[in-house]
Amino acid sequence: MEETIEKMWQMYDVDEDGYLNHDQARDLVISTLKDMKIPTDLLSDEAFDAIFEEFDQNGEGIVSKDAIVAFFSTFMDFCHSE
Image (cartoon, rainbow, N blue to C red; front, top):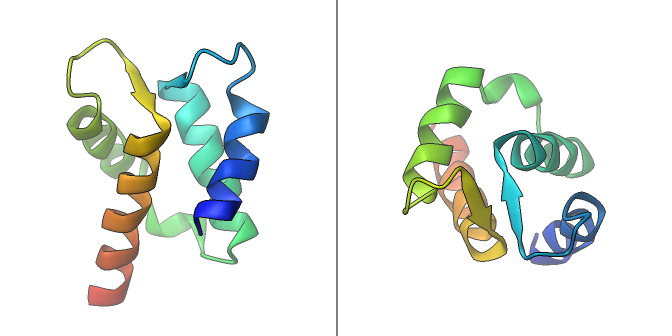
């Protein structure tokens, strides 16, 4: 999974500042889910927004790669609990 995230990160962190804004992060997550053959309908807009807020710890509207990896770990745990 981390290899897939790394590949996608390089595509979406176009300014190479090490962070993604909300829209970039959502696009990365959706693309990664599709790449992993996970139905994207499992992640509603509201759920993504809530999780993004949780991982945007300083409220600046951006997340790091580590936060995205943590997001996927949380999301995969959620998927396996359903």
